[in-house]
Structure formats: C-alpha cells, structure tokens
Amino acid sequence: MRGPRTTEPAPDGDAERAPRAVVVVPPDPRRRPVRATPWRRVLVGVVLAAVLGGAAVAAAGTLVSQRTAERFAVEDATRDTAAVARSVVEPALRDAIVDPEADTTAHREAVEALDRAVRRATAASAAVRVKLWAPDGTVLWSDEPRLTGERFTLSDEDLEALAEDRSDAEVSDLSAPENRYERGQGPLLEAYQAVHVPSGDPLLLEVYYPYDDVLASSASLRSAFAALAFGTVAVVIGLLLPVLLWLLLRLRSGQRDRERLLVRALDAETAERRRIAADLHDGPVQDVAGLAFSLGAVARGATGPTATALDAAASTLRGAVSALRSLMSAVQPAAPDRDGLGAALADATARAHASGIATVLDVPDRVDAPPAALTAVVRFVREAVANTVRHAGASRVEVVVRRRDGDLSVRVSDDGTGFDPVTVLSARREGHLGTTLLRQVAEDSGGSLHLRTAPGGGTTWELSLPAEADRW
Image (cartoon, helix red, strand yellow):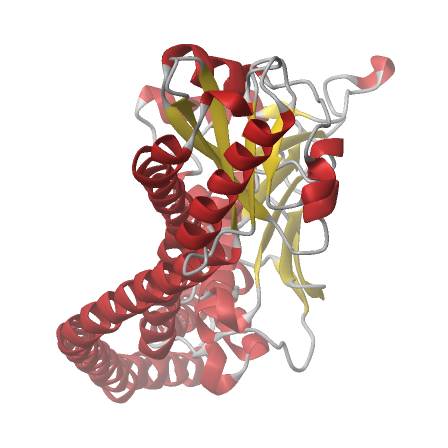
C-alpha cells in the first residue's frame, strides 16, 4: 500500500484542529472478488477456442493453397510449353519465316507448316492462344491472324527468356494491346519459351492457358486443407473434452467438500458460541443479577454507612450484569443475513453503549448486498467502534450505511479527541497494530478506506466496498 495522501489542506487559521482527509486504502479493481467461472462456460470457451483455431488454420491454409496452386499451374504451363516448343514448334520452323529476303511462296509454305504443326499439337490441349515473336517484338505467327505482322514492345521477362534460352510463366496482363483479342475469356496464364530456326536465330514462343485451372486446383487444395484442419480440431476436442470434464468434476467435487467442511466448522463454532452464551445467561448472569437485586433490597431497609455501602455494591453488580450481557452479545452476535444488518450493527456497537457513549445507527431496513459484504460491514463497524471506545474519549458515535450504485458505503463518526492521521498510519511501519484491522477489512473486500480526523476534531472512517452479488 502506498503512503497516506492528504486530499484536503487545512485552513491556515486553525491548522491543528482542522480535519485532514486521508486515503488509507485506495480503490483497486484488481483486489475486487471475482465470481468463479462456471464449468459450462469453461467448456464453451474451450470449444470456441478450438473452432476459432481451426478457422485460423483453415484461413492460413487458403492462402497457402492459393500460392501452391498457382505455383503448380505455372510449373505445369512452363513444362507443357517447353515440350511443345522442343517437340512440335522447332521441328516445324523454317528459315523463311524470319528471312526478309525469302520469296512469298517460301514464306507462305513456312507459315502453313508451322500453322499445321501447332494447331495439331494444341487441339487437344487447353491452350487459348499461341504467338511466335521475333526479337524486335514483331508477331511472326499467331492462331489469331489479325495479330500476325503487328509489332509490340517485348517485356524484360520476354527478352531475358530469349537471351538465356529459358522458359517461364506468369499471369497475363490483358490490358496490354497485344492481348486485346484474349479479353473476355477470363484471367489467363501465359508461358513463354525460346525456340530456334534451323539457322540458329532465337524466337519466342508464347502460349496462353486458362487461369480457371489454377482456381480449380486452389479450391481443391483449400477444401482438403480445411477438412484436415477442422478434422484435427474435432479429434483434439474429442480427446480433450473427457479429460476436461473429468478435471472440472473433480474440481467441483473438491470445492463442494471444502464448502461442506467450512460450513461444518462454522456450524460447530456457532453451536459452541451459543452454548457459552447460554451458560453465561443461565449461570453467572442470573446469579449476579439476583445478587444485585438482593443487595438493593437490603440497602433500602438499612441506614447509615451500611446502606451506602450496600447500594454501591448493588450498583457495581448491575454494571457487571450489563457488561456480561454485552459480552454475550459479542460471543453470539446477530447474523446480518439472518437477523438483518441493523440488528447486527446494534450488537457491534453494544460496547460503546455499555461504556456510556451515545450511539446513533442510520441503517436502511433492507440492504441489498451479499452476506459476505454485510459481514465485512459488521467487522468494520465493530473494530471502528472498539477504537472509539479505547482511544477517542467520545460522547457520541454515529454509524451510517448507504447503497450507492454498485457499492456499499459505511461511515463511522465520533466527536472524540481525534489524532494526527500521518503519525498513526505510519505506526504500522514501526510494528504497531494501528489501523491494521480496518485496512484488512477494506483490502479483503476489494474496497477503499478513507479517514478524516485531526487532533481535537473527531474521527470519521468511511469504507466503500462492492455490493454486487457477482463480485463475491
């Protein structure tokens, strides 16, 4: 706990008697009691966590399957295009197809030979378009005749494939002008491979394939991955649930056993208190009360010093009876949840009343709070009043209880001598009891404790603690 903080400065003219407001125990939500999690909520949480984990794995698997399917499609398209280039296109190529000095007949025959070979090879394949490029970007041949003879700028990848005599594939850019006749057929995958005419000059073969194959492969992989992920989650849940249920049942059984032992211990303590209270009431209290009554009767019939002495003895015995009855009240106090908070606080302040201090209780007829909170209130009031009786020299003590939103507020005020709060609160660090019990009530209940006092200015303790049932 941090040191006390003064929240209201004392007036300059009466610094000695002006009360000082000090935060003894600051509010801290982390100390507040938290309701135990029901076992059904634990099970639902585990299942939800497992399902969400499976969904996350499936989502990650979707991305992985998309990339994997695209990689497989690129590899397949590259391999197929390389096979067509080596086994079909290159054997059908003639120098006349690129020789600007070749006569028209030779050029036409070269184009027709290439056309027959390529169309025969691609008839049974999924190829959408085939193009043969010269290094300067001229389309030498295409199965789309309108492209033949047109010239476009080759990309860096195309030029690298020509220079390095390699094959590759990528998603086609259908917005490019050389691809205008492929639009409307969906996304396409274009694969390119360097080929050579008999004289050795390099050309670029480009084949376009539907991208639907990539999407279909991705969907297939995604379904398999999702089935694997959720199947694994289902197996894990099936294996975990029996173990989790067994652990929860054991936990609940142990908790119930502890609660039963605690109830039995409390019942035994209550029974012993009742027995002691009954023995006091039926034995010493009755005997002392009868003796006081007898001495009073004798004193009324006597005269002189004897009568005075007897009357004083009878008065002393009546005081002893009152003290014994207060002790009985402390031994077997009223239970706030059974007898009401007002009755329990009346017992808690009985010591002040027996000491001749006027006590005022301002408590609602019904206080909506759990029994643990009401018990904390009674403990707090009993200790605060005991401090007043022992140290304050007060003639009046007032106890006020109020319900404010979700908290229960308890204020104990007296008109006694008061004290310097900083000095008394620091006594805890020096090993003195000080206000330890009052602090403990506030800390154990998850509440806050404030003190307002000064030498000659009376003392006010105020406790605020949670009063909602789900916080205990």
